Image (cartoon, rainbow, N blue to C red; front, side, top):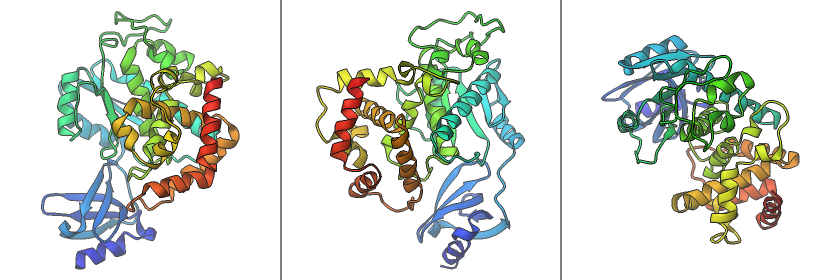
Amino acid sequence: MMVLLAVTTTANADSAARMIELKDAANTYTGKVIARDREHCFLQDRFGVMHHLPLSQIQSLRVVGTNYRPSSTAEFRDILATEFRTGFEIQSSTHYVVVAKKGRAKAYATMFEEIYRQVEIFYSVRGFQTDAPETTLVAIVFGSQAEFRDYCGKDEMLWSDDLRGYYSLKSNRVALYEDDGLKNSVTATKDGSSGSGKHDRRRTAAEVSGASAELSALMKTVAGETANTIVHEATHQVGFNIGIHSRLGNTPGWVIEGLATVLEAPGLRMRGKSTTEQKINSERLEWFNEEYETRRQPGDIAKMIATEDMFRNQALDAYSSAWALTYFLTENPARARQFVLYLKMLSERDPLNAYPPEDRLKDFQSVFGDISRLEVDFLRSLERL
C-alpha cells in the first residue's frame, strides 16, 4: 500500500516529467510515468520503450531527477551496437538511428529521414499540431526474412509469412526486411544510375515516396514491398512520435491506418504541386471500388468507426475503407480542419479508460455531423475519383 500511494502521488499531472526509478522482483526501470491508475503504471524509459507495470509488483520507487532525460543518440548507438553485431552497421541522422546490413545503413537513414520530413509537412500544412520526438527514432532493416523472423520472436511480435515489417508501440522501433528487389542494389550514383539489383515494376520507392530529385536516384534502388513497407511503417512511427497518436491506445484503428495509407500516395508527400492522380492510393481505391464493392453495405463506415471488427474480419476491406474515408476527410480544407479537432478530442481522452462503440460513434458525429449523411457524400466523392 505504501508503494501504491507513493506512485499515485509522484505520477500526478504536475510531476509526470520527473525521472523515476521503479523496481520489481526482476528489473529496474528508469524513466517517466506517463499514465497510471490504482492498479497499473505505464513508464517510458530513457530509450523510449514503454513498460506496463502492475503496481502490486513494484517493490520500490524513488525520484532520480527533476526532469525526464532521454538517452542521447550516442547512447542509442551503443546499445544497438551491442544488440546487432556481426554483419550490421549503424548510421544516425537528425531524427534516426538506423541498423542495416553493412553498406546499406546510410542509404536507409537518408530514406527514413526524408519520409519523416514529408510526413511532418503533410500534417503541419493541414493544421495538425506537431511536436518534436522526445527520443531518437530507431529503424532496423534486416537482410533476410529469417533474420526478421528471429527478431520478431525476441520482440514478442506474432510472425507470419506475409509479415514484411511493423512498428512496435512498446519498443517504439520500426523493423522490416529487404526483399529481393533491394539486395546488392543500394549503390546509386550521383548521375542517377543504379547498381545490379533486380528491377521490379510493381512500384519503385521513388514512386512510392515521392521523394525529392536528390533522393530519387537512391530510392529507385528499393523495389516492391520493401518500399511500401518503409513508407507505411515509418509513417506510423512518425505519427506516434510527433503528437498525432498516443502510444497508450484508444485511437481507433481506422484513424491510424487511414493516415498511413493516405500517406503511401506520392503526391501527398512530394514537394510542390501534385495531381489528383498522384494523391490517390490507387491500390486502395481499386480494392474499394472492385473487390469490396460486392460486400459493401450501408452503414459499413459507421461500423468501422465504432469498432475494430472490420480490421479483424475483413482486413483488406478495412484498409481500403480507412484510406478512402481519411482521404475524403483530409483533402477538403473544411473537413481537414474538422479532422484536426477530432484528433485533438481523441488525444484528450484518458487512455486507460475503455472506449466503447457508442462513444466512438458519438465523438465522430459531434465533429463531422450525422454519419448517414456523411456516408452519402463520401461515396459520391469516391465515384468522382
